[in-house]
Image (cartoon, rainbow, N blue to C red; front, side, top):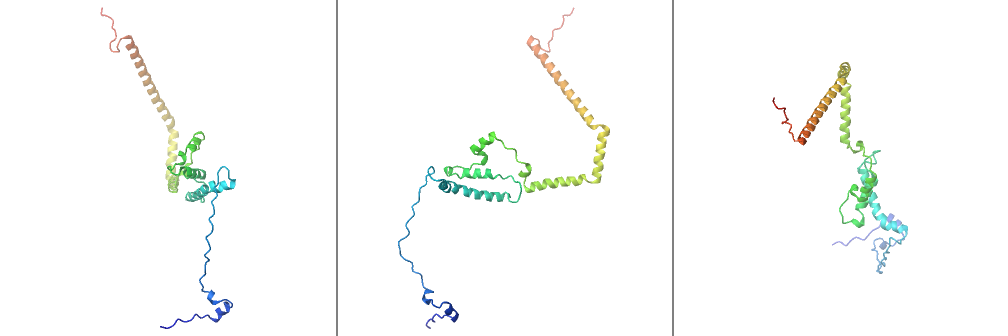
Length: 225
């Protein structure tokens, strides 16, 4: 077998690394076998006696910061960064998230925002106005409503439809359709009212006859002469 060739350095490399021992370029570093670093003692922080800074960093930020991160992700999902108005309420989401991620109730089931006890009690005395329909509709539902309205508008703009509507308007004005309909319903109401009064009179008469011991079908007749 051929003996391995010795490592050669070009003149350029020899100029660059001049003054540096070549053995140090490929030498394996040697780590000292000193004793490991001493363990840092964890300081116990009492919530009632610690400083405000320690209280925030120990008890508030570990729960609040993940909640804010989830809030931003949900806001992006609800397209809050694209629209001026949305149905998403950031305070409601954060309240629900913090309540369900409270370390004191980790083993309990998830609770919806409106089912949280203090939220339900607050809304009982301070009811909210209903959310506008425009914020509840999805883009597909809103598009269907707009398209339907636009198609109806185009149909009403048709000359023949305009002529038909003008004819119907004139017919109502000439024949007093509205007054006739009003008079018709007034007569119907009068008939119903008269019928109810007759039924009440018959019922009252039957009650009187039963109390006096005479049935409605057996009335006393004068004796024949």
